Amino acid sequence: MQINTQIDDSYQQKIAAIHEATQLNTPEIIKQALDLLYEKTALTGRQKNRMLLEMLAGTAEGPEDLSVNYKDYLLEGWKEKHGID
Picture 1 (cartoon, one colour):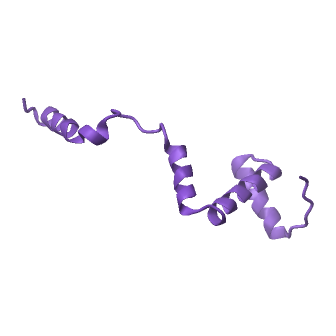
Picture 2 (tube, helix red, strand yellow; picture 1 turned 180 degrees about the horizontal axis):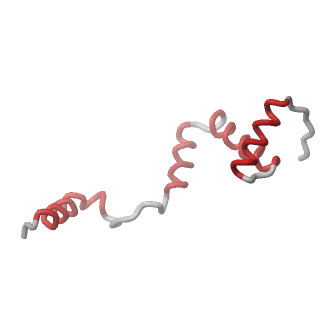
Picture 3 (cartoon, rainbow, N blue to C red; picture 1 turned 180 degrees about the vertical axis):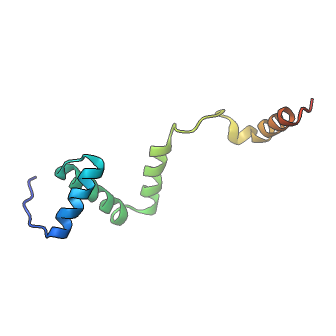
């Protein structure tokens, strides 16, 4: 789809500032702006949460069983920190 539109100087300045900061071209700036507006208005809370989880998946480090065995890991850490056998 091709879109032709006129924008006033304030929006031209905003696009220029975004370009300066990100090195994105105008079509990419518009695409990202539409994505943000879509996320804000069209997605339900559940869909937003799912997107966030997908973005965060695999970013944490640590044992895979931490949620189940967190007490054991805490005890182990405290013993190590305080020199307890």
